[in-house]
Amino acid sequence: MTGKEILHKMKEKVGLCSSTDSGKGKSKRDKHITHGYHLVKGKAGHPMEDYVVAQFKQVGENELGLFAIFDGHLSHEIPDYLRSHLFENILNEPDFWTEPEHAIKKGYRITDTDILEKTLDLGRGGSTAVTAILINCQKLLVANIGDSRAVVCKNGVAKQLSVDHEPSMEKETIESKGGFVSNFPGDVPRVDGQLAVARAFGDKSLKIHLSSEPHVEVEMIDDDTEFIILASDGLWKVMTNQEAVDAIKNIKDARSAAKHLTEEALVRQSTDDISCVVVRFQ
Image 1 (cartoon, rainbow, N blue to C red):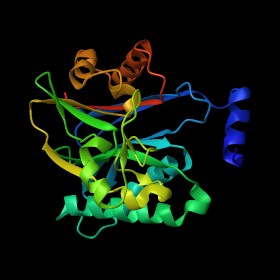
Image 2: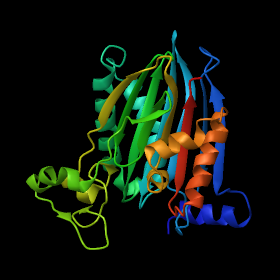
Image 3: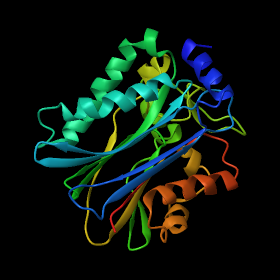
């Protein structure tokens, strides 16, 4: 157990570290656009491995909404590092405003390289990620690696904006790099018999067979756009996209909506860490 883990457990014992966290905010550019988030620690014995970003940030004359879910595996240091550095690396790319998709992919790549170079400090393991950048309340850029997911609701209909990077979907690529995908009875497919996602940050021991290239999707915000949900697989393991959308379509407060989704996942017996961000446009 690391020093950070020992400190975390000591805080929990004396009530200084809650197993839940939540918050909310809103755009200054458009007061109708609000966000809220809620996190619940799972039943595993390790410290919380989900981390969230949810904020509006003024950059010159532009406003950016920055939203993310980072879901660690065998690590809470790496998702914490991502929370502090990934958006910074993306926004520091000189072509962010002209070629944002390229800047996002390069920012992901630079961040993964930094993590791999800091293995002694950050430890083993890795993290999935789903990020969303809202530019001036008009253009949404979603990127992801792993199985954390982004879903938009338009006219009551759920549309997935991310890709679940499952090992079975990328078996040929993994095998071409010298790896393999296990498929044991009663278990999910795993890269080299270990990791249940085909793309992730970190995971140095698997990186030769593992990608950190994000899927990037561009979504324009129009009058039909009601809200987006970003969540870790602790939610999506027990709810479909449409079920999640239907569960909060009548909840106008974004933080209350995020909390309701995490609570519904617990009712459905999710045992994983659960983190959720909701951004409402109406």
